Each structure stands twice: as structure tokens, then as C-alpha cells.
Image (tube, rainbow over the protein chains, first blue to last red):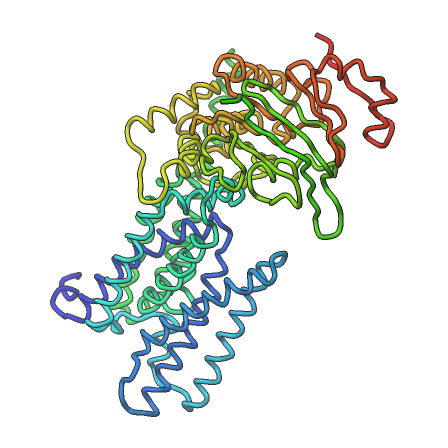
Length: 289
Length: 251
């Protein structure tokens, strides 16, 4: 059943891309969740949509590939992340305000670009919900490079990022340059979102970053374990999502997200059952005593 | 080489609209256990922020370990346990070991990692605060008093010479507050760590501290706790600016 994925190059690209974003999305997502920035991913993905729409518009008007939608999306995402940082500094007491501002800005721009182009065909649908056939060899290599950068930077700044996420005040007291580290972090987020959109789509990319972490946080001991479980959950969902997406001809984004929610529900229920069971056992032991 | 660890000469500090500290002269000698008390808004937290370099004095001079504060770079000589330590995100998935390891982040600097010796030091710090059995527990699963101990271990792991604690016993029940002070006493006498403790709890503090400082914009009293206890209720109320119920703990 899986052999087609090794026979056709475009499927192979999709498959490997899926494996890569299955690692980097929850890796960064773990930091995003504990810093309570889950919605920033959403805001940035909508800005990325504007970038993609811009790229598609250029393609349609000029008839040439000046800037592929992937790169225009990536650039918008990075610029959006800089704006979010700027806004968060302007509204220090209302930091979450940056999110609706950037999100609506992204949607607004997308609508304008789409109407100027008189609409696009199925391309846009692929970007919204993800696709198994949208990954070219060039895109795959770009995503691979992004993944290597993301992993390297997190490895290099792990302890600073971790301290900053746990306790920003303490980080500053101990002499860590909080602003710089945060800036690097938001830039990484923009990169990961742009990379993940090919497979899961604009509307669901934040789910791939946060849902595996939401599940793993329930059972993990410590932060490293949280990251580890989150990557396992997301890999299972991504692989199953891509395979079923291909055979059932549905966008993989939807299946991936539903699998992740199913996983989350399962983990919460199993944990509850175990909790009840041990409670009952304790009670019975108490009765015996 | 003098043994003065902290020296503040005529230090004043203004926030944009009000004066928080005015002409404060303050010293901490090596081995002291200084209790800093005073009413809310009296400038206790501001004084700590100045010492930690989070704010700059409007006028006056501050010396840390005999160096002017702007030249002082050995931040690991000062450990800090903040008031916020007990309002952190309790759902944060970090083990006790991971939390204490954070105390080494600054000491290590960028692009350097824990080695075996440092990992051992983390375990020693956790042992020092009596929490060895909880190494791999999530910090959020511990009680308030236990969490506070872990935050002390995090400050201890970089082997500071001065430990600053800002209201560390808020939200810790009475029995554990006593244990907590015992731990501080042990750190002070056996490990020779100089302590600066900010607290509301005048009673417990006067039993443990070797010096007491009262701060209400200016420093009203700075000396040993016995003479502090002999201050009359009227004098204390005067200093606080309102009548005061002094809670003393009898042992």
C-alpha cells in the first residue's frame, strides 16, 4: 500500500517532507505552548497565506515564476513575525492584541490579492488545507534546509530558550538577552510555519504545532520528554494522514488534525481511567488497614 | 580586601512619578543574614532590583563585591529567588532536575553544555535543600513549600556567595515556613552564604537574621535584631506610618 510512495518522485517528496515537518512543528510547538503563544502560530499562518496569494498573483499576471508561492509565503511570514514583535512591545500590557491585528491583516491582504487575480483554481485550496501532491523537489530541499537550521538553532540555544520560557524575569536577572533570544524564536516559528503549510495547509498548521504537545504534556515528565512524545504523536498522525490522503483523495491536513485530536482524547481518557483505578486501589487498601 | 559584599552610598531612585528610595546607605558584610522589612511600597523590591541590575539608581553609588555595579560582571556570585517563583506557570512540564539546571545557564554562557561535574552539582544542590527523592518529578506536582526549596536549589547551583530572597515564604504554610528558615540558617552558618531576605514576617525573621534593616523610602533601622525587638510598638508604627500588630513567635 505504501509502495507508491517510493515509486513516484512527487509522492516521495511529500512523504519525506511530512516526516521532516512532523519533527520540527512539535519541536518548536513545545516552546510555543509553554510560553502561551499558541495563537501566534495562527496569526503567522494567515500572513503566510497572504504571501502565498501574492506569489500566485505574480505568477498569474506575469506568467513567469519570479517568486514561487513558497518563497513569497516564507517572506511574508518572516515580515509578519517582525511586526508581531514590534506590536507586542507597543502594547506591553495587552500583548495578545498583536495576534488579531496580524491575523486580520493577513486575511485582508489575502482577500485583496485573490480578488485582483480574479480568484485562483485548485492551487489555493491546496494551500488552505494541504495536499499530497504539492511538493516539488525544489520545495523539498528548501524545507530540508529550513529544518536543519531550526534544529541547529534550537540545539544551540536550548537552555536559553528553556529558561526564557519558564521564567522570563529570572532569565533577565541571570544576564540572558531575552529580547534577542525571543527574536530568534519568533523567526524560527515563521520558518516552520512556511515549511509546514505544503502538507497541512494554512488553516491547520498551528494544530500540528500545538496538538501533539497538548497531548504529550498530559503524560510526560519534564520538558525533553514532552518534546519527545510530541514528535512521536505528530509523526504517526502525519504519516497516516498522508497515506490516507493519497488513497482517499482528501487533503491530508484534515486527517492529520483529526488523528491528533483523537490521540489527545484517548490520552486524556486513559489517564483518567488509570487515575480512577489507582484511587480505588488506594481506597481498598485503606479499608483493609 | 574588605569583606563588604554590598555597599550603597546615598542611593536614591525615582520612578517617573514618585520617589521610591531616598538617600539609602546600606551595607552587607560577608556572612551576614540580613532581614529587610518594611511596608508595601516602601521600596524593598526596588532596592533588590537595583542590586540585581534590573534598574539603575537615579543618584548615589552601589558597589557589589567592591566593584562599582556597572563594572560588576560575575552575576553568578549572586543567587536570586524571586517572589514570582511561586506564581510561575504550574503546568509547565519541567522536572526538578531541569528546573535546577536552569541555574547554570548564565554561568555556562552561550553554546556550552552540562558536563558530568555540573550534573553532579545539580544533584548536590537538590540534596542540600532536602529534595533528592523528587529529581524526576514535574515541578508543578510539588507543594508550594517544596517548589520554593527547588527554586533555592536553582539559585544555589551556581554556588553564589550572596543569596537574595524576595518574599520567599508567601503561600507557604506555617510549619513549612519554620523548616524553610532552618534551611536558610544552615546555608548561612554551614556553607557561609550571605543572605538578604525580604519579608513581611517580622516575628520569624528577627529570630533568625543576624541583622535587620527597615526600609520605608529611607532606611530607618539597620542593626542587630535584639535592638530591633526593643523598639517600642509606637516607634515601629511610626516607621510603618500606621498602627502595627507585631506578631512575635515564641519558641
